[in-house]
Image (tube, rainbow, N blue to C red; front, side, top):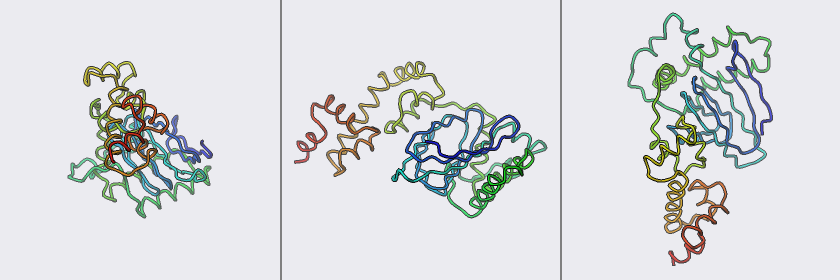
Length: 280
């Protein structure tokens, strides 16, 4: 649950947020018409999007493009609080900041590698510390200052070898992106995502997603994905020494009991019975 929440508004929309959560959860983050920079001060989180299935650790950040994203918080200790700082990158704001012209480094095409994850470094850490100062002194904050902080962030990312990611983000903000259903499904077959959540990653309604899915795979989403998960579980039961609960989580089930029931319904044996018969 959300324990602490602070934010700054730029004109009519929230631009910088700081939040703490203290329990494991899956947080849906939809940035349809904006990019987003998320800094994780601590904890362990998995980012699930139309293009990524990536684990993020403390003092790392991600630079997200437009679209639907899910942040799955993976806390080992229920007493641990996860603290994040989020900076929203609206096209309107970028146009205001760079109303004359974009920095040459952004405009000029480079061969720099694009990176979702931004590793911990002193420049980014000091930038985050400067935001903490303003959260402690909110009366100092105004629209001009917020514009400067966003501009500072982009310039820091360019100087810390993330220019390719900044270029990709800005290009994405001003273009229409086509998301391929089969690529999203392949990326998240073993993620703990519902059919409705997969539909959101594809920018589709659940009904449209199910129709498109059946057209492409000649199967329903639930049957196709569960079949893939059970087949992977069979392989892990035969070749690994992982316990049943770990296999359930590894194959994308958040409930080991449900995994056991489904496995027995499909295979005719419980996972333990199957392992005993096929590894002796």
